[in-house]
Length: 311
Length: 156
Image 1 (cartoon, chains in turn yellow, blue):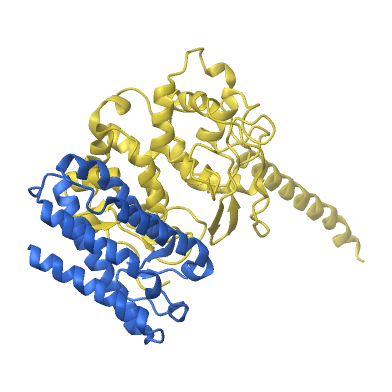
Image 2 (tube, chains in turn blue, cyan):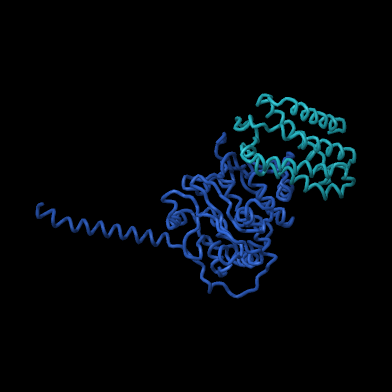
């Protein structure tokens, strides 16, 4: 070994160590789970009726209700959600203190819904649709928490998600969040009271319609240019319809509102698949809310969806 | 659709049921075409008649209501043989197809059909006014979606 390269090597090594450390620090910083601090939540008494509306509008029961029984308010979880990335097992969100959310603080719950972060400070996978829920109004989420606490505690935990490396490392979800969560503030004020904006809020945020009715990229994020334009069913075979004017241009507002109430399409069919579960939620909303959703959906400009064909 | 049409549909569906139960080994494509026709005929009763009336889009007509329920009753009883195991995994055409789950969970599927038949039979000849129709329609409609939720695939 010559003297010259002997002097260079330690410097190279040092450089490499600094680079790795910097990358590690950047990773640590970028992937740090965000939380909502308890002291930002001013004391208030919850509105349970609104909590129930939020529960129905957000479709919580569609995934969290225990499969194989008929009561949609039994939120023991356990549904297996197939996806191109692996299988997610939906958790128990009943008020059970050991297996559900019985011991959670209100701030834990608000953090979970708005930030996608669990009470132990790790990331949830975006199979939990917080990319949509992140814009929920804080009061709506607090009312929802109070409402969930009134439901029956259910024992039992779902198995762990079945995901391959590196997706099984929850910290990596922080990278996904940095790339795809837009970080806009939760909804408040006029957005919640104006009828048209209320429709947008119900469709985009609580109803999280785009989560299924949009194609996704290789990392599983919604393709923004084709939001609501339909795509392959993430749960398996078949297609989820385009709900922009390109797909439902011939539906009237009344047709849409009636569909959300009954599951009947204008061409005389009853909806099936996961949408049947959605209708069980939307059928419990007020006519006013369903009409608001219909008005907003009818306002979506026509967008061509991904090319069809059997998957 | 007029009344004669409805009786025609009812008879046709009944006939489909009889024919299908008589020929176990029918060609795969034929069975699939027949069950699609049966679904379309049931859809006409459900929506062309019952839904339109319950939404006040068409005047209430007792004879039409009875005919629709008679047709649906025959339809629900004709369903089981329209889903032979031989049609599992058949190429999917058109807007909708039968899901393989029908045969993977045969007991669940059979129970659904039985429930549908029971619901329809319970309403047959029992709906005698527009108010009764409005009250019953959601139950009948859930009979359809109960199967479509799990056992049907949307192709397009």
